[in-house]
Length: 301
Image 1 (spheres, helix red, strand yellow):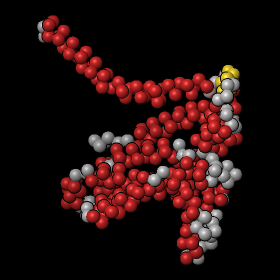
Image 2 (image 1 turned 45 degrees about the vertical axis):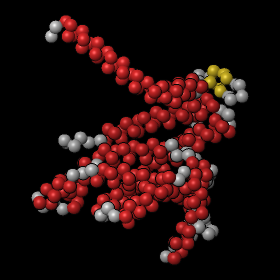
Image 3 (image 1 turned 180 degrees about the vertical axis):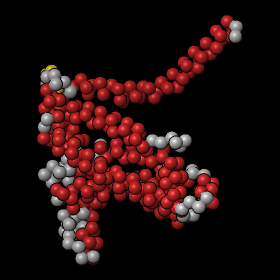
Image 4 (image 1 turned 30 degrees about the vertical axis):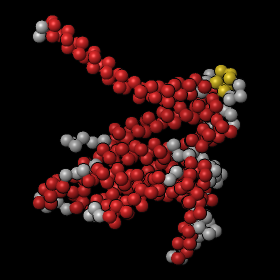
């Protein structure tokens, strides 16, 4: 290759690089304004006794020691993890079962209507979902106890009992998120080439074997996406407990994000709230990274 050709190739490469940066500039700008700058600002105020009304005193690691050793932090973190561990696996498994059911049906107007019904709760905000389920779970006249009464089961306290509050919130959350997960998984199922199943059937494979050896591996990307999104949403839970229980009874449904809200907007202790935000950010990074590491599989494997 001649020197002129090499020089021309370098110039072309530079032009392509500049074009790439030009097209990426709007996205990079929004990442800078909406993510990097707020994160840096949050780290800064975590080292201060910071108040919105003017108090800004540097106190080093005092906020970190105060928050991470407090009973409120331990309670909120425990509630958040308990809710996530309870709601996400059940929600993902139910979504997969429903998606498999839809995938076996013929695409007709009826199945399209049913899919729309499943997706409808996703359109509603979690605040509206909370108000609907407050009526359903009302211990005195709620629909849930009315249905249980038909089968001779005693009325349950649901959201007013410490041991049942988080499971009740998990039911609300699963119902609200089911449609979104079903749509994602159903799209993945319909993208799988039917010839794989036909070949497996000829080889004598049964339904379970085909599900384990064909469906799950080829649906891996969608499953990892659904699990990651649901874990992030569950860890950031705020609206459901805020509207339905106000963090009660006796703090049994108080989440990490609720603590951030209480400290920042009600107690005006922004430095301590910033520590919660940093913990939540790091925790989400670690958890989502582990999910991708543990569950992502190469089809070639």
